Length: 497
Image (cartoon, rainbow, N blue to C red; front, top):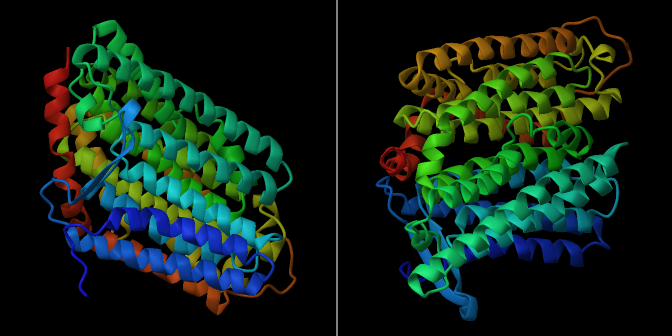
């Protein structure tokens, strides 16, 4: 019997399949080989289902799928999921990077493989929930669900200073979460007093009339929660520590997806709920983005640990993304979303390769690595490829996103655009230093080093192919999410003081 596409709960299926993966991984924990096979199968099945969602894409900005049921009627909380072009591309990125994270982890979990994969799948479900939830209570629930698995992945499977990094990650994100919770509850109460109806529906709460002072205060709380996750300087200090100590899979998901939940929160929640305060904050946010771009590049240039270097580079990349987003220019907004996807691909690949280098050399110290081009040419070639992509070399994926971000910034304010170009040049310097030292610098150790295995090549090839496809023809992806961004500039220009 054929499924009725109009009623079948595709979004719930996408949301709960990772929980089946988590439960199955936990149940198979006594049999590590079976557990790994099940985890990979579950991740691939999820990716297949998510790939099917792209068949619903229309490119018109409307809701492609929506599911709505009562959850806690007494409080006006509903189980409401929605999929549009913006959430679709991020859900697709999440499913793809989950496969990468599982493949990169097979046999390298150190211990307790079942619990490791269970946490990885639970975190995927939380991330997907953030991208799909249209009830703010449900959104907040999934926002918190993301926090717990990552805390344990860093704290249990991380490196030497894993506990300190996990606690720092937990405290920063918890503070942001509590601010969001207080603001959310206040917004719901004000709406209920005005309408006589308690609701957490994002679509209904958008029209709530608020006094200017309260509106700015509530927006600030949401804003802080999201820019902590992006992160923007000076609220970025948890990120380098978390990346440095996290296992490879944790770093892939952290850079590729958790940071993007902050960007999504700005676009989907904070700015549409509070258009007036959001419009007033854009110059300040753009300034913070520029600070993050220069400061992140400077931090990266000063690092000896190549994993920490890439972590600091994320601060710079996300700073540039926010600069383009704040332009409210169509090119800048499209560039922000495109760059969110591209950053997930390239930085995820770099963290995977750094894990491979560490496993071979026993070190991530810049000064103890060198000569990899002659010793492991296939690994070195991939490392060069993804670093060039990260720099925004034409023909590779980051180029289109960065170009659109700069176009948006220049249209809004030429001085901001010029500053962003300067920051990108500064950012290129640390990448060239990294390549020169690691690939062509003098080797500190002449011991033989194995090149990429077939499994490792299988992890990197899909990432490289996607980077090439999005570098040569990014337009197909832009068509999916372009319509979802069209209303935001009009909303904020109308709401500006």
